[in-house]
Image (cartoon, rainbow, N blue to C red; front, side, top):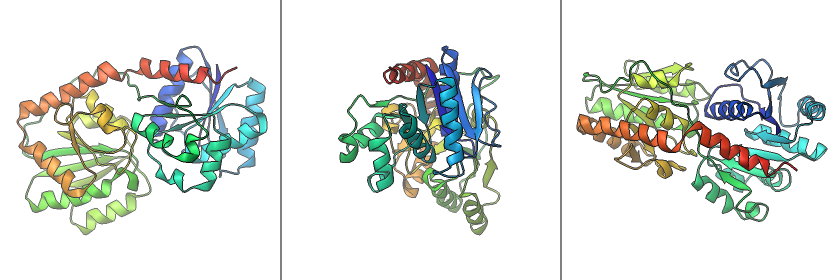
Length: 358
């Protein structure tokens, strides 16, 4: 196959991690893979050297220069399929499809109820998208429940493929440090969807209860200023830290006691699997496809996306027997190894995409 991926991101996040895995995996299986990225963005250094990377401005959804760069490259290299991974890219990919009649597949990693109300996106999905990849069965069911999508897509047009991971060997996995201060960590884009404002409120309650803790979040995004202000306003400067973007989330989690994922909406969060790689107990809000992979009190703790529920979940963690906590992390690691390998993910993506190639 000759495939071109579109990604207009300015920052590194879960979407970009998935894209890197998919691109490198498909290229490794002998396919001709191309990536059109935003000019001057440098976080694609993880892409294999045999992938053709092209710069484009991606100024907006109507960027004629971006569309021309993509169309010219497709014609020159006889590309057979476009894959778009962000909202802006869906529109650009749709416009390219209309102009040169090429199959267009989008990847959707989180629940987007706005699709029901966004008239332009509804038209786009009905007319200029041929297939959709999601990362959770629940997300596929949600999309097929929308009447406007149900009329345009059948069950096979939308595919649920869980994210895959390569298990890395660490020099040492740190388990349950003998320290009275609980080290809580999370990682992701600083957006409202990720629910980090919940953790501010949780921190206030933990401090009021005189529980010793620190919370560290790796990542950057539009909510950074609001979160910093909330940290200062609530006198949490000694307990709550925004670490910015980091190179290795897995190493970051390895130093923690508990990984908390407080999202308001997700498909299945990448950070869940990254925590499992270092056998860490996880507390995850019950959104998206979380219950498809996580069994409460077996390979993690599930709570509702509310402040009191997250707080109670953390307190429940603190009171748990240490051996049981270690077992939660071990069970998560075994779940990851058994069901979420990178090879399985790439083979499923490959088989799905082949159906669009004449």
